[in-house]
Length: 65
Image 1 (cartoon, one colour):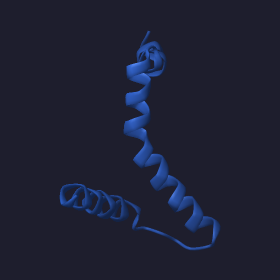
Image 2 (cartoon, rainbow, N blue to C red):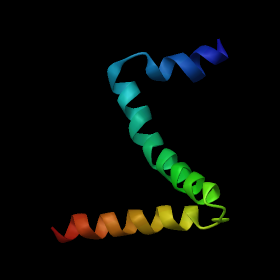
Image 3 (cartoon, rainbow, N blue to C red):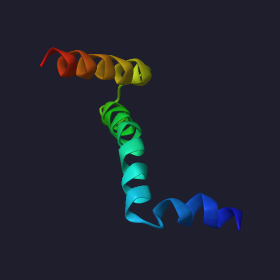
């Protein structure tokens, strides 16, 4: 029953599935950016800061328009 509520229920209807995608996209993109740095042989420890800087910049641009 716990697995159902954790894995199946969030994808049970369209609204919930879209909400999962909306909330997971920043984490997936941050993980992809770290993966690119690791593949290039660099150690990137600034992913969380980059996520926050991007959020601040996007908010500023959105409010300026």
